[in-house]
Length: 198
Figure 1 (cartoon, rainbow, N blue to C red):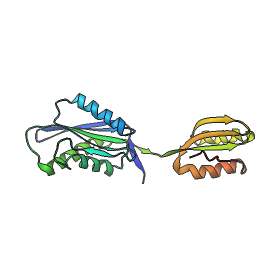
Figure 2 (cartoon, helix red, strand yellow):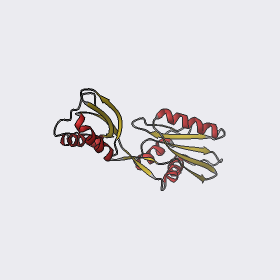
Figure 3 (cartoon, rainbow, N blue to C red):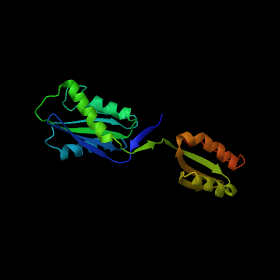
């Protein structure tokens, strides 16, 4: 199943029974980047009652109710991220308490609705797992292989010249096996794949 990230940061503000909920959905790489963003939000909203959040980033998930009753903020936010099939996203909701208690069910709905509002119509980008392939070819095959790499829009990372030409490039993990087959075909079986390739 494909996963997606956001093209840009999204925000939305809602008011529920006098409490302000300011939702932020921020694309990022990992937990360390998420902690930096959370600190930035805390500095920007020093008077906020709560800053609740959830993170999905390549297996580095996490969440916090930040003082709200357990399970009423972080988990609902996380479930909205999962529902949208997002990864590489920090979802944080800043709450300014307005004096009216919402109850556990009301909090769950408020936090889920706040982040859902920020994600409404958000442009998503499919996250594609990349890998690196090292191919060893003869000098006469180099131009043909380089042309193929360029044509497939793969990123050439390194070229090493010795007894043979060794090209290192990145490509989607899902295309790895087909790339090996194609490279063997292009070089009439001469392409070699050293053990160093991932």
